[in-house]
Length: 494
Image (tube, rainbow, N blue to C red):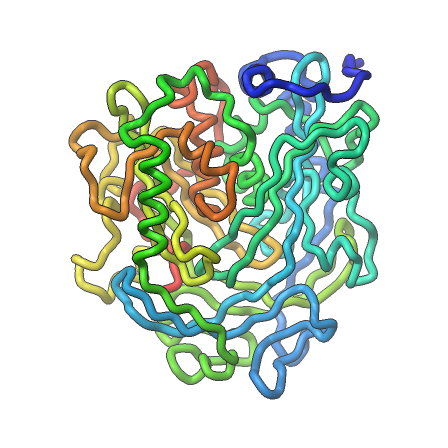
């Protein structure tokens, strides 16, 4: 039987907490559930969860209507989210002005991960959760993944398990390890934020039927399997305090102050005007509405589609909703280079119209190649050629992972980490910078610095042997079989 720490979490210094996290990330043994037992459990949960997602028409959607005055697509309760229109003008990117549909969800949801020490090792309480937009039904999610409408039970459904751990995180026997508001996809959401939380709990918190305790080593290994660890789990994992104090000198090619000054400069000098407008004003320009979709006239970017859902594992058993369906699989890549022996990541000060602060740090490459096919080569994304032409020995991480399944349908990106040499210079264009993994971890303590795609790659970087010393990945499988350089879509809107 697992030996529990019966005293509850004790205060740690930063160094002690880093050591505890490092132990969880490297320990082989002491697991509540072995790797083989996890896959048996996960397969059983997938067989148990029954979910049917059927494409519908807007006229047949239950509970949703196009608002007469604006054409916005909204729930009759006035809650959950709305599909609205947006007009964008910017000095960033190859297209200076456009209109598009956008998801407006002003509610701040909770993405919460409970951790607990068992057998002397920290474990994460992970959930097998089905979402209507997931490509494969059930994926591994954080302990709690809920919008305010969900956990206040607007839909009249069941309560959210473990919610009190995050609504009352400083109750006796609990301790907050991370708590920060983070953005989501700025091309698909307008000013969307979720509260990313990690709370250490006491031994009284047990794993329910759809939950399991895993070490960081186990979760890191699962990141290398296609469409297994969901987006919400990845963003919360990225907010863990950095335990990589042994990954090299603390200093990077740029100081922490210089990096923050550069970000502030980018936020101050970029010209972006993103204004909401009635959805009816978007239709008839570059977008059109059919009975079962709202799509771009070129068939690019994404569509808004209605679906009906039946589920035996959610707070309610049946509902209708619109989902944003990207067209294709996105390419999201981080170039990594050792400078003076220290691994650095090449990040991009990326403008997306839905960001609250105009600019957030994105990966080196985050694009939809098909969306640029009609533009001159000079307008194509920088550094994409280094990703598509990378040699196998340069590829440290290559996995297709799903985006959020509660609002997006079959949204996948191919996430890559590519190691380059000094052929990629330390001097890069002004909207790029080389930063260390430690510096990214520091920025993740605060809101609106690192975008959701880059946060996935931070979690992935912490799982990569050589970048994170002492993290063995023996036995990890499931890497994507997609050939390097194949086209993709879904990471851009333009």
